Length: 395
Image 1 (cartoon, rainbow, N blue to C red):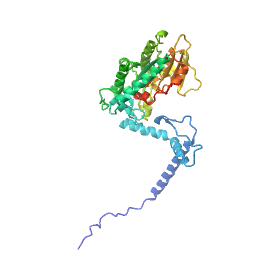
Image 2 (image 1 turned 180 degrees about the horizontal axis):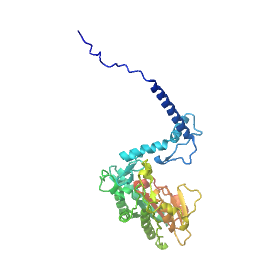
Image 3 (image 1 turned 135 degrees about the vertical axis):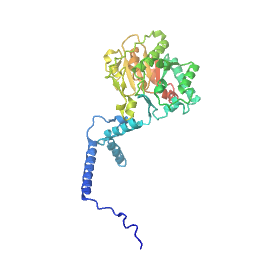
Image 4 (image 1 turned 90 degrees about the horizontal axis):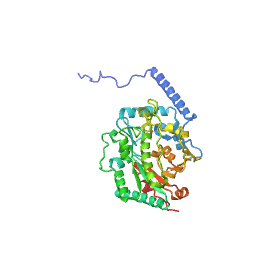
């Protein structure tokens, strides 16, 4: 007689769901809908700031006056940036990424050792190009930069204006010891090494090489922020001294005596800094450092300095300062963000000084202002910019 082997097998038909589950599911559904409604409604609450610190950007604006076909997309972006609880959720997500996996929110930030952070460049390639040497910079590109410097110098010299150029080293150039172990240099000479050699071989431009002074200074004090892409005020003061020494040589008839850099006191436990790279990680609370010379204290006490800002329309790419001490020369400084802590130091040495956030020297503007000296400062990762934005024809 055959025995059915499946007779004792459990039934494949699931048991009937208890009614308790349906009540629970309805409750969860209601809670979910309520949470969505509340969080969505919070998107329309008034805000004191439209800055998203964790993403280093401003919120997408609410669409007004846009074509009907683009309104849904624009509204979606604005709503998504303001959704209730978004910042808290992002902070939690980024905290897990940074603290457990060492992965920052921004792809152009590199987490180094000992709490140090490094900037890979606006497009994420500058570190490979200008430090590691895995991306090429040709000799022809560097010659074009030197030629542009020489062209600018010739124009200025023809009009009786001195010209001083300096390049602010990237943090990795001065503090390579805090990089990850894998971030080694594959080329024996960096583009900055080669450019400095080419400038010196040309011999027509006054160039201030800041690297040795900053490397010597770091043995006694920190000259770059660990959590920021810039030098700190101590590093800027080192650069200031070197720049003004060259300016004094360029203007021998003025007998310029550079004003000593006034550095504010540091208060341990109070003067704590979290820089732009800390914010870009998405978890700035994980990165803090002592601010050994707080720039904010300098800027908060303009009455202690001779130079006063005189431009009415601020934040337009130009800053104008005047100091009534006589006799002082006049200056135009073409600069980037590395010069922010340099401005209050440099301005003390000039009767009138203008700080221009541009890589392109404008001959018409220079002729109208007719300074005694033009100083050009740029960060290392932009050293090819002068050739990319050459000086326009002289009017």
